[in-house]
Length: 225
Image 1: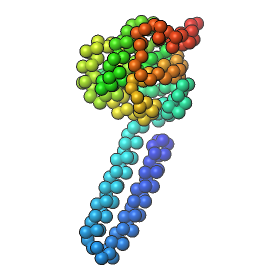
Image 2: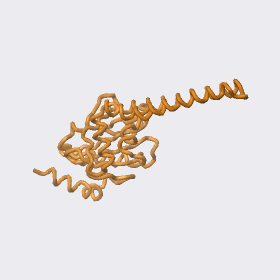
Image 3: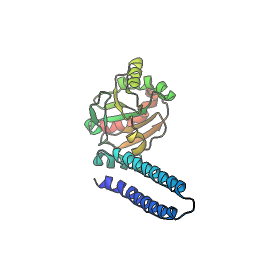
Image 4: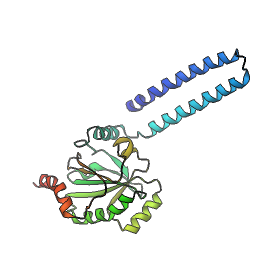
């Protein structure tokens, strides 16, 4: 609620300013030689601006559904490596919500991707291979898709025969708004405590042990009792 109040305050102030401007314009135009035409134009402009402000308010407030989770992910975005994403929650493609703290104790390979992204399509078979090569007791590969068309995503998964966990971020609230991810594919290596260990941008040979073993070596050592 505090976060929503913080977001709402500047927009409320803007709307008050618009109302004050509108009142001044109406008074001025009533005495103007230009008459009704200019007054009508001013009224139209006023309501257009008010509509824009209302849409912005709804956009920002609708994106914040869990203040605790949002605060955690924003912290990760600000700090990059070392930031925590353990409270991050997103739905699977079937709508069931998944929170990353369910995988506490495992190293996570979080891959942000889209079907319209050429490098993502090229990289996906390697991630599928990686998910089979890693020890499931210590690691988990998770795809986070940003497509709006879920049917298209399902077709892609079937075509590429992907069976590792896929989550949906079709509003890009997490990938873009909270984590600041603007380029795809992008992969986060998250340690056993839910903190970001590495950020990797671009299509990588995840099926090649010579590539991924050095990236996960520190994490693997940390996982050893």
